Length: 542
Ligand SMILES: Cc1cc2nc3c(=O)[nH]c(=O)nc-3n(C[C@H](O)[C@H](O)[C@H](O)COP(=O)(O)OP(=O)(O)OC[C@H]3O[C@@H](n4cnc5c(N)ncnc54)[C@H](O)[C@@H]3O)c2cc1C
Ligand SMILES: *[C@@H]1O[C@H](CO)[C@@H](O)[C@H](O)[C@H]1NC(C)=O
Ligand SMILES: *[C@@H]1O[C@H](CO)[C@@H](O)[C@H](O)[C@H]1NC(C)=O
Ligand SMILES: *[C@@H]1O[C@H](CO)[C@@H](O)[C@H](O)[C@H]1NC(C)=O
Ligand SMILES: *[C@@H]1O[C@H](CO)[C@@H](O)[C@H](O)[C@H]1NC(C)=O
Ligand SMILES: *[C@@H]1O[C@H](CO)[C@@H](O)[C@H](O)[C@H]1NC(C)=O
Image: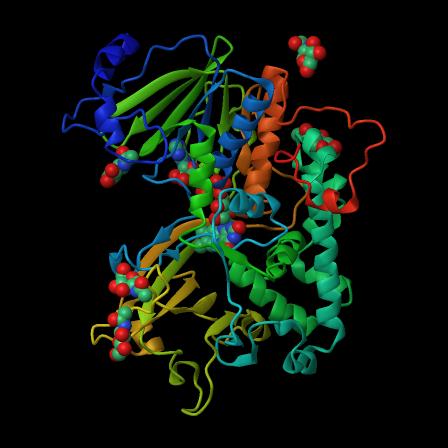
């Protein structure tokens, strides 16, 4: 019945749709003032198989991209619909404009950096022609703050082997840590080989065995590094500074795999204009239909298909049948009713770190000396990371009031010219602070003196990641897949694209007798050179 109505309403909409000027097809018309529930205009459903993707972040957008690769290579006829409650593509990867000024260079509000071994992100930025900018290659000063004093200050770039670091922690701790992280990264790159790509995992515990990471995910970062004989002060200060800035968790709380991932940030890059540009391209190139401002409410099994119901911000709702559904959002906060599927109770509760991100501008080139109890002449670090060690040493010691505080250069126009943004027409620096609590303006003034623009955002940023060997299921039921099952293992933009590739690989095998890549045996006698093998990325190069 809805579909008949839908067809009538569809006429004459194409102009309105193109007026949005979004880079992808948007089969949607913004809501009217009518309070009644109105079905969304959709063309009648034909026999073309359809896949729904819930979430248009790193996971959902890349899932659409991987499906389009399979379609292309197998000549499949499949329609894909992507839903997101937000008004934008990118999820936890999004930017804001300082002072709401579109001429200024935007600032990352969520996920900021990726590294070269994040092969999908890296390759996407190359193929899509996006400029990468180095993150923090400056001579700025790094300080590690314990709530009442700096336990260390050092140069920011290449801090591993600065004199002060070696003086405090010895030579062995940094070099051993470096080689442990490098070994982990080497294992990580096997996730891009044809072998791993074409034998998808249906269970992350099994993947943990395969990568021989059981030892690291089942221990806390503190226990693991202590058991490896690493200098305990190094672990409690330096490594904890990394786990606290990257995952908002202390070394006795977070598992050692994610602890090591926090340390694998050398050579970090971001996309000029915003990392979300990659995810927007994934969506655009996939030619999927995108329904923004649209929340998926329920999925029910019906005659071997999934009947999905979604609600727009306005009065529109939408119902459609799908052959398969990919959930690419943290399940519990997505609040999707799965009670009418066989998947219902299988995803264990997963708490997330509730993080306050505060972005601000200030004309002061560093925080005030007094704020950190320093003398007027002391140099104040412009990147302040934190350790919980003060509190562990004595409950009466003050806890750091933030997880991290960092200067990110001057506010600039998009063309790179420094902008004079302050009220009195001077240039300003941008600062990013992560904390567990809201930081009031009065606190910010205490820290920086003058402040200009302030932007606050609360995220459920990443899972709380205790040591474990049990993970959420990848496949919830026949034709129903869960991308964010990977997050309690590793939570990054890149790993969500890997998890999405795995989900799509499973889906293609289960439902279409297809795959992301055509498996053609290599011609007799031709062996790829080592060089080629290193560059190879399953899904891109097949
Ligand atoms: C402050 C911060 C800093 C970070 N720093 C980094 C970093 O430097 N590098 C890095 O790699 N990672 C970083 N991360 C982690 C990274 O953001 C995530 O791991 C990754 O972006 C998750 O992508 P996703 O697509 O799985 O989920 P999300 O990006 O959360 O996307 C899920 C989408 O689903 C939508 N959704 C939810 N429920 C529904 C529903 N019922 N119906 C429709 N849509 C729904 C949401 O609106 C959302 O857009 C950071 C995260 C935060 C918050
Ligand atoms: C989504 O909703 C916001 C208002 O909440 C609106 O400004 C925006 O245009 C909508 N976007 C789309 C694509 O419908
Ligand atoms: C996951 O894999 C492990 C190891 O192969 C196995 O013991 C376990 O039963 C699997 N769990 C599920 C839910 O399939
Ligand atoms: C850079 O952009 C700003 C604002 O858009 C403009 O005022 C300025 O003239 C530009 N500078 C150069 C060198 O192009
Ligand atoms: C900013 O101010 C300085 C001097 O105060 C001036 O030289 C410069 O041109 C200004 N820059 C812009 C982009 O207006
Ligand atoms: C699946 O595809 C392969 C070729 O890729 C074909 O040989 C096989 O017959 C197909 N199986 C089914 C059940 O369609």
